[in-house]
Figure 1 (spheres, rainbow, N blue to C red):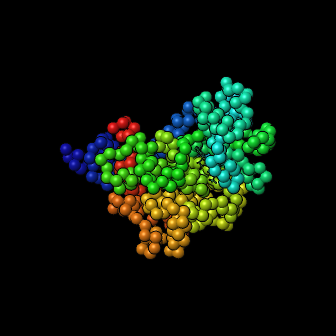
Figure 2: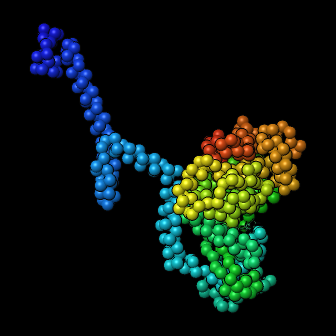
Figure 3: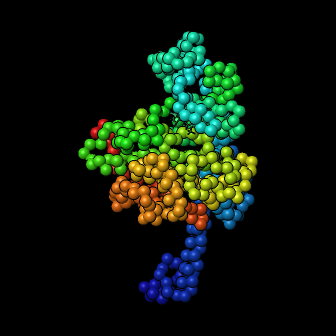
Length: 489
Ligand SMILES: Nc1ncnc2c1ncn2[C@@H]1O[C@H](COP(=O)(O)OP(=O)(O)OP(=O)(O)O)[C@@H](O)[C@H]1O
């Protein structure tokens, strides 16, 4: 007992488990403890490194390479290696995704090309389609409705028709698969290039975010000149996704109720009219911003977001169309400094996706490597978010749906430096803010964060991901209504 209370160093040596108050013992204990701690830390570090090695054991070649590189390294160097590998991983996976982009460009795109060639998708012909009515005309192309001529159709049916004969054929029951055909204008400067870009963007999105845009069926070059065809002229073909765009719905005075049963599969019963309108608008905007988030995640900025470029499918899905002005800022595709191709009614105040002094992009692999820095510094995706804000305002404020009012709005908002709150105080347009002011003005708050100038760091406007986290969308009754309608409640 005495030795327990007052041990000598000998006792310590004999029984070092004994509780000891001698200075000598304290020191040895401290040393022992710190040694144990150091050992533990080393073990933990080794564990992290071992873990990495273990996880590589599934890939023997990579593992042996890894071991040959790291085998000679000491503890500090190994940690340096892990930190470097982590940072590289973060950089390569940061938006717009250098790694995923490289996989897409060097693996998925050639794979798609091979598969399409095997299935005949890349060998479309003029005679595969019957061209119907003209739907629209842009600077670089003319858009037609059309049908796919079935394999069993006679040669007579495949020949180009006019007037009633053509209409009868397009409406023929055998011709069930409707398509949209875009004729790239021949002899118009920049048209061919624009058509090629549009084709490239459609293939890219059909791999990266197919649900966001119209299904692209491919392209063909006309082999002879007759009726609408000019020999050598390129045609792009999409699946027909729906017969009305958001702009078509918005032209109708009954909007948004005219789109209610399309969006929710039924009429929302037991909900008062203003709230019904608000729910429909919220569901449309949610889908637009979700699609924008997906395309921005791949490095693409659409640059022409507006109701006329949003097709509503029969099942209430929103599809973005018209990627002729889009730019892929992961590799600098269709990016020309100072070139604006845009609709002034929906265009943000900065006018360009990147500052005007940004130089022309370097070769694609280098541009891709630099792209995370470019995105961090410039947030080019915010360009589309301004346009989405204008679409929200137009949907929620009926008077702004008229082109003349929209023009007046644009000159008024410019006069108040794109400060929506100031515009609200000063406008002479007498807009109706009822829908935006519901739920403590969450819709209005979101609009003010989309329609704004860029801040000093080229931020100051919500990105698509941030907009989807805004209280306007949180606990959105529109989602509940959409889900319930799917189950038929
Ligand atoms: N996949 C599709 N499904 C249904 N309709 C479509 C589809 N693609 C295009 N359209 C219709 O064709 C019209 C014109 O298409 P698009 O905007 O791509 O052509 P454009 O030549 O660029 O025309 P604009 O410059 O006027 O926008 C659209 O407004 C839409 O009505």
